[in-house]
Amino acid sequence: MVSKIHEYTEPEAKSAIVWIIGEYGEKIKDCYKIFTEHFNFIEESDSVKLQILTTSVKMYLKMPEECEDMI
Image (cartoon, rainbow, N blue to C red; front, side):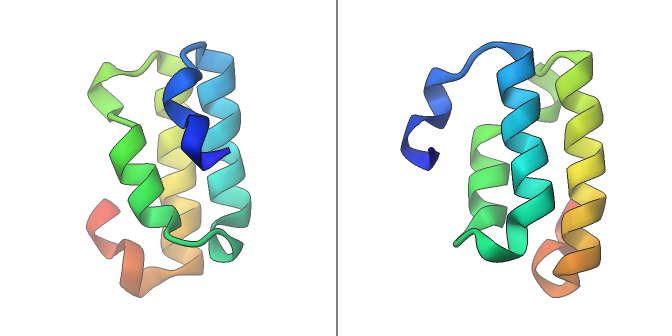
């Protein structure tokens, strides 16, 4: 999935990927790097922005040291 993230352009697909990262981030290797490299808050649609905010909080709660900069 990670190698093909750039191929997903629909807001629903991007939201789903961001949700997966938020739910299972502690099990995904380099999830912070994946999240920050592939999703730009300013350029995304509103539905993806909402999911990015939610995922940022989830990741911070699960991994505070690694994700403090996001908050």
